[in-house]
Amino acid sequence: MTYGERIFAIAPMMDWTDRHCRFLHRQFSKSALLYTEMVVADAVIHGPRERLLGFDAVEHPVALQLGGSDPDKLAEAAAIAVDFGYDEINLNVGCPSDRVQSGTFGACLMREPELVARCVAAMKARVGVPVTVKCRLGVDDQDIETALDSLADAVFAAGSDALWVHARKAWLQGLSPAENRTVPPLDYERVYRLKERLPQRFIGINGGIETSAEVSAHLERTDGVMMGRAAYHRPFVLAEVEAELTGNPQFDDWALIVETMADYAGRHIASGGRLAHVTRHMVGLFQGFPGARRYRQILSIEATKPGAAADVLFKAFEAVDTASERRAA
Image (cartoon, rainbow, N blue to C red; front, side, top):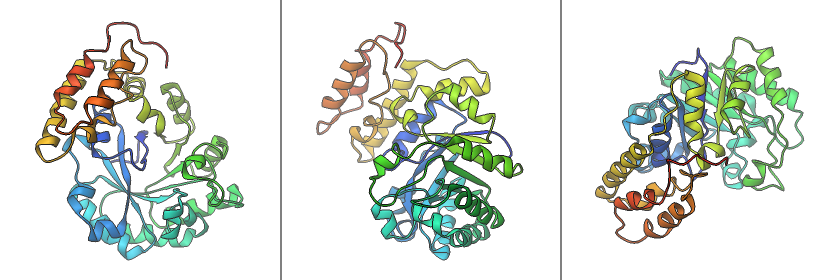
């Protein structure tokens, strides 16, 4: 990972960006930086490491997002992650869930920039890969000018290689995590102002970004763009972004995608997994194509049956007419 160039990334998303999801996303984008779901530092230290941290080599570059607020534990977890081969360690300072708050990490750390800085410094002292932070504009009644500036100044002084900003506030009381992704208004201009104030620092933007054109527009004002739910629900947008940013022809070999995912699913099943672990991330794959509804039905029914095999993917794919023009999503 090099933070001296423009970066397009796929956001860490709880319950979504597991290793199977990341493997799928890599088929559409060879250059995007992939992020794991958030993993709590204590779990990395004491939990089943292969299950929590294992990933396929094709996922590189891939970053582990850690949750925690104890500098020593975060440093130990970061070192373990680097031994697993992760290309970056990211600290979660943006998740607003009650469970995360009870552990004193996530978005509530926006109120404690010096503690966040100590966490960053401890990880930087322990590992040789980039250490980054993902945050919000602020929380609750914080002023977004002073809150974001204070956090940015603290983490960069501690050695953070990048700051990824979800361009919304987080409300720690009164809104669910899902509502916190949509209800607080987006304020991209606030992130742009941060970049203007810190021109030598890597500032990335996240929140509500859905198209390749939007990615390109944000890259005119920031160093990196992170796409979340749009990439999950419509993975093909990643191929559109890849083509937009690299100038290479847009990848659209659907048969190869299905064949690759079926082979991957077969290996997962052979190791004791279930087909549905993989296919749950593939439901939106053919959105906009004739036959997409039937494809979803087959996956939803057949892939969840006990003993389901990878050939269910080929059966579902047969229902889709990829030769027809794709309808706008």
